[in-house]
Image (cartoon, rainbow, N blue to C red; front, side, top):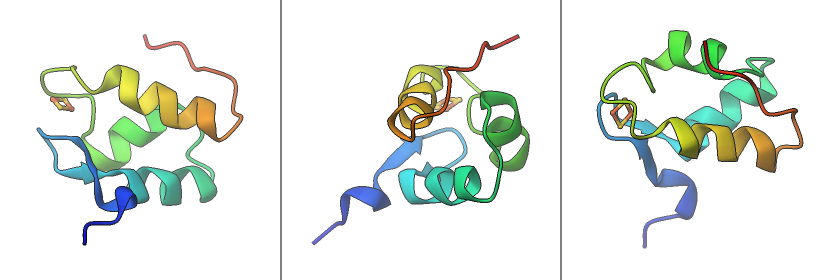
Amino acid sequence: MTDILDEIICDCSGTTKAKINQLIDDGKDSFEKIASATGAGTGCGSCDVLIMDILAEKSIEAPIKN
Ligand code: FES
């Protein structure tokens, strides 16, 4: 069974929800920090909203993407 945390958020970089959650817990609390750590959001950009949603889920102020 696939855990929901194994869900791929960014197809371009293969970044999972679990990885993004881990990065947020490690202090990477903005879209830019997650993007630079994983490459997520730096390809087609279709995962941007999903990354923002995860940040919001973790009660972090929604970052502004430059
Ligand atoms: S799916 Fe994340 S940049 Fe394309």
